[in-house]
Image (cartoon, rainbow, N blue to C red; front, side, top):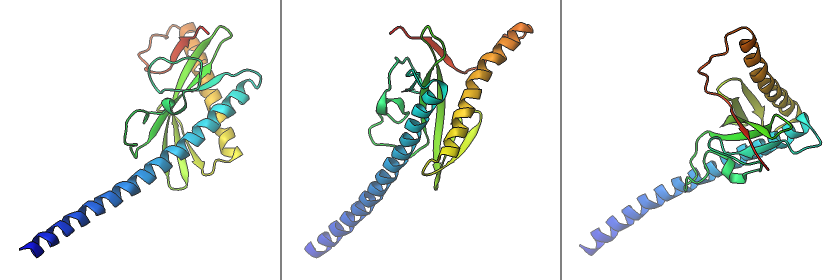
Length: 181
């Protein structure tokens, strides 16, 4: 009887260890996913600021939704922030981009998905960029130019609509916020 109980406990412990090992592997992959995406996000943030205006700090990593201030939010800028067990899923982050001399900021939300040796970066449910890892200058410049064009088009398109009488829209898009320092 004691032998049967010991065998059953050993079997249960073995199942627990199997689950534990699977959870550890999951944790390693979810951390790798986050670290790779965060690295790309930081490179895009720094690169876009230099691309737009090398003299002023004009782009910040901000949460993908909710209010934000003129600052980098570190890990708080990512959609997985505060979730406890780091999920293995696509990750979103926001870029708070200064768009005026008076402190107006536009939030652009990017969603990233790691696919093998690349990261797919989708901008506001629009264009997706496929970036090889590690990120190279050519891919980064394509994203920076794409973000610049995306922001510029957002404004010029709405002005064009206004000028031609078709500016009523139900778009869900950018948050434009005035931030008082």
